[in-house]
Image 1 (tube, rainbow, N blue to C red):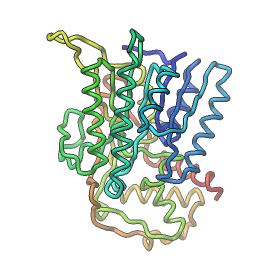
Image 2: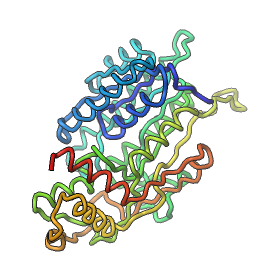
Image 3: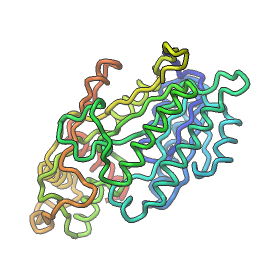
Length: 362
């Protein structure tokens, strides 16, 4: 079903997060009369100041778009609090829901499993229940639920590129297990309650104002501080790096077309449910990635030309929960939406480095 986002209320969870803030900004810029309702717990998994920075940028865009009837409502709150989510749906009645709020990170899930259960499972369950009850009393309710999954669900899949048709029943981290669980929950709710749902498996998203726990950001911090960066699996890893603008473009296209609600031969709903990969479809070797990052850091003046990069690199074994390669099959995305991510890694890293220099006033 085609959905116009003009004059609609859209709920974005994780709105002060990396993807959530960029998505919310672009929705306000692109559509007239849109009301973006954002929620974020603003937790301290990484520095809250970066989340506040993103939120300030988002609020600035909202003010600039007021003349076009656009609005932003932001709520600081935890999705695991069901009464809060129920009240949010009752007050704002969103037509489209984009669930991006989650506890991210493979390695952190080994150290702190509880926060993943709270955010990724209980929080998402609360969203699903609110979507279900949005149709009560004959209300039109939620027209499309779009939610973030992850390339981590593919685990140690030997077949590349990764296809959404592949069996993904063997997660190798708790984070991956929660994301696969979200897909299963969404399918069950789509089948039982006819909730049009689309899951998005993101592949290594990067760019300006990204997450500091990601390699490109963490490497930059450590090199600036004169520390050693660790390159896992002795550099024999490949990642399908996907630039933030491509992710946002893909999400917005998908938001505007939901899976069709249909009745099966048994007289019951056929689950209006789809899953897509969003990745660059071009895995990069980690050593090549580090070389490009180094070159861009020198070119931008963040690090001096004579910096001893070799003296600040250490090749180490694979870490628990990591995989040797990620590689997205995006043919279904291109077929159904006429789009595939395309930003070259060097271009994306250059934009990140220039943002980093400006943000830290270097």
